[in-house]
Amino acid sequence: MFAAFYGEEEDKTVSIQEDVAERFNRAIRGYHGNVRADSHFVLLGVDAATTGRLSVIFSREYFGTDGNELIERIEQWHRDCAWNVSSYNKKLQKRVYFTGAPSPYEIALCTYGREQGNSIKGTDKVIANAVERILPCIVDGKIVPVDIMREVVHRAQHPQNYKSKTLWQQVLSVACALTRKHLIEKGEECLVMKSPESLDAKCGRMLAIADSIEAWVLREEKIDRTTTAMRYYTKFCENPCDTWVIIQRNLKPYEMKLRGRARNLQTLLGEISAAISEEEFQQKRNLDGTFCLGFDSQRYEIIEEAKRIKKENDEKKMKKLEEEEK
Image (cartoon, rainbow, N blue to C red):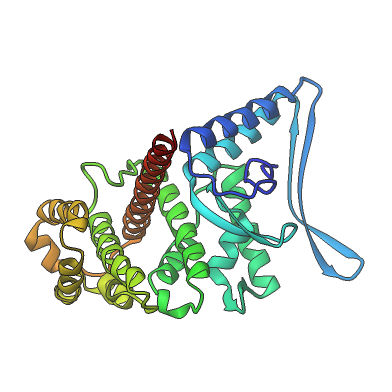
């Protein structure tokens, strides 16, 4: 239904939030416009139990303007689960990046699948059962099963279990999308990088900044290895205070190498640290899904800021060359 919106026809990363929102709104308006008094919607889920036989596992009917209810629930799902996600496009045979909700199949794979080669695969029956549980959350507005959300968050907090960083990031994005949906369902504001935000989200932001600073130096020195922040990712989730002491100690040499170039990141890290209660931080154990939200949001912001600065520098160089030629 949202194939074109999800960028399957484009060879680029969708990063402009306003553009994404406008495209989504146009798509929704278009579907609402197709609903008439004589409309009849039938939504079916089928499973190929054996060759040549299909069983109906999911069925809904909508008559007349009741079809608007279906579209509104789909719209709500895509708004509440919107995140910066990626998915492998079989038609284009490549990974596409977009801002939106992961598909039920993607959620099921990241929750119950295993890394096999360059993709995540799962047992057909297990994946089908998970998809069957997720569909009512979209079309009926039911609450996302907590066990699914907790399992994908648990997997996102164990990056060492994935050889491919891209596949782990795919799991992380699904964990963020479902955590965001869960917070909205609980009636809590999904505040990330705004005040007030949870301790878990702040911890995620701190780790993302530490990872970015070390990764900066490693790229410049052309060293291919995992950062200290990523090596201690799981331990940090389990015991953030004690683990942060280790990460901070290992971060010092990299901060010194960058000198003043990392001042903005160091200042931001200091501001976040100062906003955390020392007593609460010492007692905290087992960070929840909002940690994933904080980590991924902060990392995305750092990447986007780096792109913006690079673009400005490139434009300045181009302008200078043009002036010299004149």
